[in-house]
Length: 234
Image (cartoon, rainbow, N blue to C red):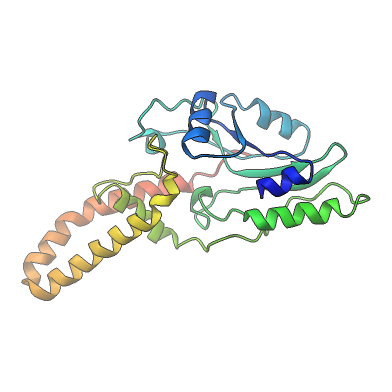
């Protein structure tokens, strides 16, 4: 899509609430073909908001996000949720912003696909007399997000079932969302092992082990629920 946009005379930028050093590092290590711009003080987001172009939600940065990162995370004003803004010199061509909820995994899912966004931009460009694009509230998304309970269990699996661990970038060149399939397999194996234990070992022993582990799992899952239940700021 980036090449198609450039061929049409446009440009693509990735704006993040991370400091510029981390934005540049992600651009390099992920091999992105477009520039990533750090906006830790949310000046760009504020300009879009004041211009009534896009009103990104903002979430607080807590221990759940900062834990296990390989550097000090710095978000003076929190981090803003995903959004897409396409504009020409004359008008807004497309806009979408994430409204975090349990249904979209706190903003981690439910994002429009690249092809869909480009189609919407092309349709807007094809009609020069059209008004500014309205906010897209029902975009076409790539994958259906899993039920929130499954998502919570996957975060537990990511933390080796001892505590939930967010899919934050670890500085290893790997997009954190690429770990999803591996973590999902880890969860499946974990559940299969409990089923096998109940089938092959004395139920009393396995039940006692599960009862001992249950409080830890409940605390972890509750942590995820509480974290993502807090609505992002308007």
